[in-house]
View 1 (spheres, one colour):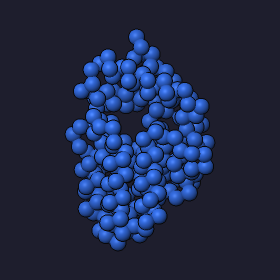
View 2 (tube, helix red, strand yellow; view 1 turned 180 degrees about the vertical axis):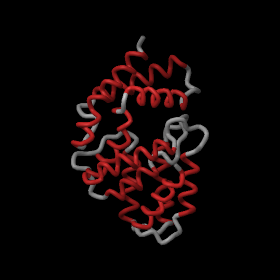
View 3 (cartoon, rainbow, N blue to C red; view 1 turned 90 degrees about the vertical axis):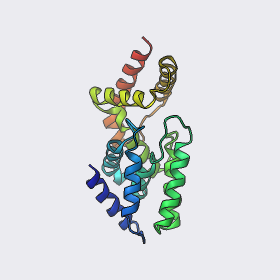
View 4 (spheres, rainbow, N blue to C red; view 1 turned 90 degrees about the horizontal axis):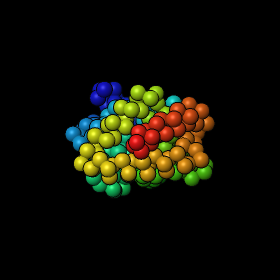
Length: 209
């Protein structure tokens, strides 16, 4: 998996006009995504989000900005911290400026990474819609894949006592189910919305037993 991801990063950074060697940034990012505290937010998740961005790329105003944001959106991840998105955005700003990318692109990647804190793009935010739909696509997977995702999330939060985890997770699931639309692009909505709601209801029912 690492070699294809590294190649994708090299192609992306070069295409975006980097003046620095992409390799050190690839090594740093892939090392971050492979940290031992991760169970769901791993290189497998990164690859899945990048694949979904590729599928939805025609809906974005700047697909490469979305791809860069996907690389950085969980690059800083500590399940016991609440500022992961902000720290990931700061990393993106620092790394992309150092790599020589244009400032408007750096600013857009920064904005998109921060958007993944709540997954609520504004109407007409085509880049934000694609990134958020790609990140949440896991919710609409087959039941067995969703069960593996939910178990991995629980593993990441193994330091949280069971009752507290159930209460917190149930609140998150209810919040998602209350949204008028889990997905913003027509393609993602058609493919993922109905199975995602089934998966969320099933997990919630299990938590409330």
